[in-house]
Length: 362
Image: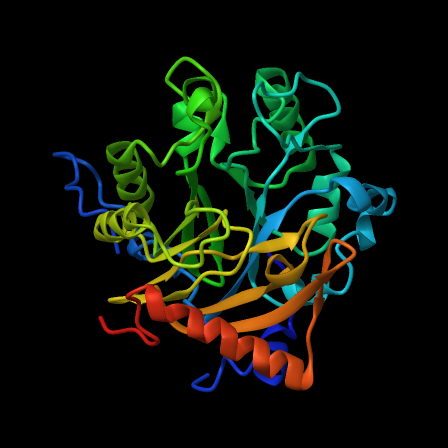
């Protein structure tokens, strides 16, 4: 999170999201005790909790640092280019980190593509304004358990909150909790996409490290119910859907309904490598596919990218805005003018096959 005094003004000016504005103990005294002096009988006071202000959340899609992107890590502070300003204006920003963080390990067997990046990838994300990532995806353990150990060690050193991965199931499904401007957030990450021959090896259990699997629906429901306890807003980051398919699969819709019933307020995810639709399911916000964000092979539709902004007030999303970008040289370049207007219209049109509403209905 950023303690920026100009965040609200920046959001109002550049994103147009803020049109509407984110006693005594009672114990009895022991018999025969001498009453204390009257002055000492003033009731103790507890500090009032901070007021909940409207907040802006920002989400980007899939990130790795393969191929032409690797040299950008030579200067991590500028690795994400101009899109960093779009992330930094939010009160909290999140992306999907689709790579193992290691320089060693053994490539996962039977995979066409395996991704890994040095720990400077985490430095680059933090420098760009990213506050939390998810590594629950079909590349998070591309370099198997040795790579996973390296990833967990790098995350700890970098102090970049990362969900959906852990030394066991309890850790992998555990929410990241943070209070932002008085709003208590709980963020969970999980993947519904795993190679069939790697499901057992990659899924975290009570005794084995790995990823949080959304294939185990009862476990996911429990994770969201646990996250909702003591929270104002529950965010679930999901790796889901079919590659190059802009419309949600039945299993995505079914999972969304169950997780919202369990207490999720925001569901955001990806995997398709193209943009998919988003909108409201009652009073919860669902986005089925954020597309690529920092990705080496993006071109055509896979190069359509951007930042999703959600305004949260009193525990619910009240506004959403898409700020479009086009990936060039592996990094998203913000669009302007007529190009941006056209891209936003295409993004809005993606909602047609989702069954979601353009505005909250709850």
